[in-house]
Image (cartoon, rainbow, N blue to C red; front, side, top):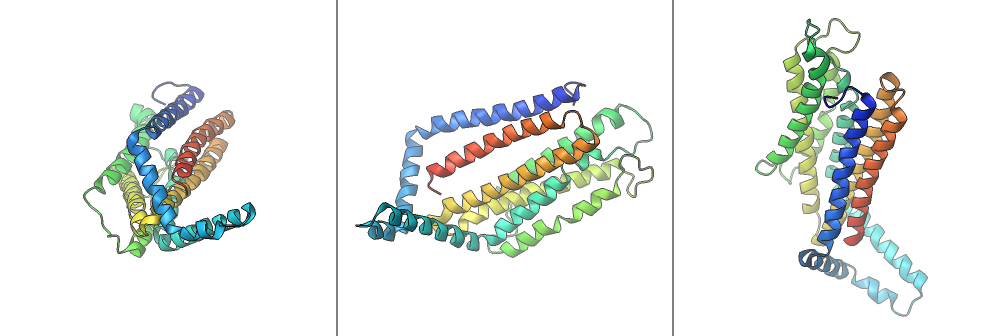
Amino acid sequence: MAITHDLLTSLIIYFLLAILVLASNIVVYFHLEKTHLFQIYSSSAQEINNEFEPFLAESSTGSDDNQTLSIATNVKRQRFLSTLKQIKWHFSGVICSTIVTYALFPGYLSKIQSNNAVNDDWSKKYFVPIMTFLFYFLGDTIGRIVTIKLRRPSINSPRLLFFICLFRIVFIFLFSLFKHKGQSNPIIPYDYIYGLFVLIFSFSHGYCSTLSFMYAPLRVQTQMTSTAGALMTMVCVFFSFAFEILNFIVTGTCYWRIYRVKFVLFGCISQSCIYFLVNTLFNKINL
């Protein structure tokens, strides 16, 4: 919004930047795929999978293609269910954290207004971009970086990490205490407290989600690590996509009636790029 006063142009620029970044990642991935190091990793992953499924080759000897395909399907289903059972707490934690985060951000939080009595530039132009968006991305980034040195709860406490993710639902109540459009007497009338809550909210999302992503592959056998990572990434992409579309529709009914269709279109394109990149990667590591 700071780039231009035209809402539609701002939305297009925002998602075009996301699409360009994702497209560049796809180009880099295909270049990386041809490197010697990537080929060594792919070969090692395939060897591990073959060691885990020795009966597949034995059972397929002398059988028709349909039986071989059935056996392969059963093996993948068993791998999927076995992995999901072992990472269920981290899997559920990512779902809870993602739902709470995207239920509030950006749609709901962008409606919170400054309690400054003076109708100045801070209240009209800079409050939402700084206190909501800048603070959110700042806290989320710091939360992810902190996991390099600080990892609490430990990998041996998956239930505790899950309940921390679940406890984040309290933010839905907390953010309802601040000033919204048409509200004159909010329960918490201080902008700096709102900014602090946004930082805690985003920090907890980045921290808990990253820990869940880090722990999940470590809780399964070596042969299952690729499947565990794939499951965690897919559930995150799915719920992020679903709640972004929901945010577009809900906020569109209030502010963006004219631009909603184009807004959703660019959102779908960016999410499609993510899906393409993730799906290609998972096919390469033989999910």
